[in-house]
Length: 611
Image (cartoon, rainbow, N blue to C red; front, side, top):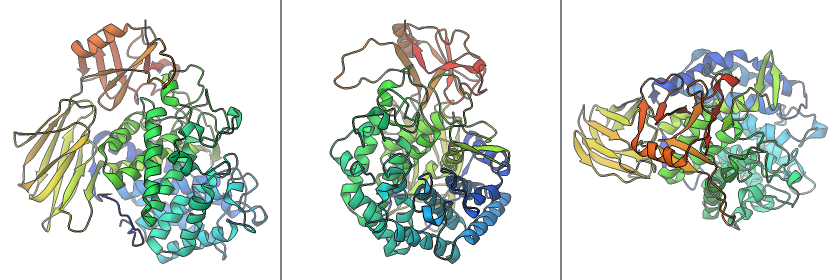
């Protein structure tokens, strides 16, 4: 079931469709988690952080993150073994919960911060894990456990004599703790529990999630993401991409519950600035240089869009940033239906996220470089029964679990006609219930290794079919049973008709390679062009050592542009990678496949040096 929200004032414009079955690439990557990741984990050890009050920095996040992702994957796969694992570990966690509602790995005398500052952050993920389990196995016991934990937290956090939430956390002046807003508001929308709303009101309206100033009001006042909480000392910067974006996820849940348009506006402003200033060609952001050098190496907003070729950057594009960014975009997309947001999600999914995971589903990279090679780094991790589990592996799995929800949606609203919105072009079978009949839409494609997507209606009915026309596809062709339909880039094409069994829609996208240069920081002198990147549909392409021995050599910009316009070829069976592209003498593969050996033999260049 999808958890209903009876206490929401604002409902989503779009909701995901249960029962979607994907095919090919994405399906195999999701299913790999059921054999490559979850069986490697000893869930008892994850529980032990709470059972034995280990008070080990942020380790309480692992249980919630893994349970959240496993519930998402189970919803799609229906894997019985995974469900049994989830049943067992949730039952164990409910037994660990104290009578007063406490679930914490910190001793009572150190709460609500813990010895290392991560107590509330960990409770956030416990709540999210329980919430996602409730969606696949609703029970009063699980619901009560969440309500008791929120009530316990509300009894500790707030105005004096309680502990101010901005006095908690480990490095970011309360931002990390305040991201508990998201699950609290999910619970409020379901139950109407006043303690949930009171705690959320305190976080948003009274503290603004940060001791250095209200982060939501700062965005409304025009502050750039990298300057949130700026005190003038780069070593003390707190513009942590992951945690701030988590707070804005919570803010959208708060907007749904209150209907205050101010908070929707703040989130839109934040998202638009992050897209313009921080997101790279691979769809992620955050770095350790050059503006913000504070805690959270490689994970702070740093004008990354303008600095993505900066060789001084050591770490960038944390997988936790990628997944949280995708989730925030998805939240906003469900409320607005803005196709530009799904364009952004697709870039993040096809590049940064898929480039971070090993094909067997066993591990996700912590950071993803744009040039160089992918080497394994633990970052924040712990040995869990012989398996090294990092925060990014735990979060990355949730990114894969999100894919079925991204694929297609139905429109909501009283009296709304049956409308199916197709967002991702992936081989799939999507159920459609129209006019009392259960039918399906079958999608056949090798996209993005081709530009053709075929939709076939199985059983008829009267409904509207909305198909995303990406902003980059400037010359799109769309036909219904051979008859041309008009399209506009960056919108949805809507076809509303009485469909017959076997009706066919064919989408042909404009996949001509695009040559892009580094975005310019406004107000700065025009710098010499030193790098160019090649984009192909939603993909960032890379020149990789296994495919092109001259991968690191400089190229001529004019020649590159000429070849992209006149002399390019999509390689049907690339030597390495999912998608191969030839531009004159240069061969490239998709960014997600480049560097897939995680060794120097597959070093690559996404930003090509120019002559």
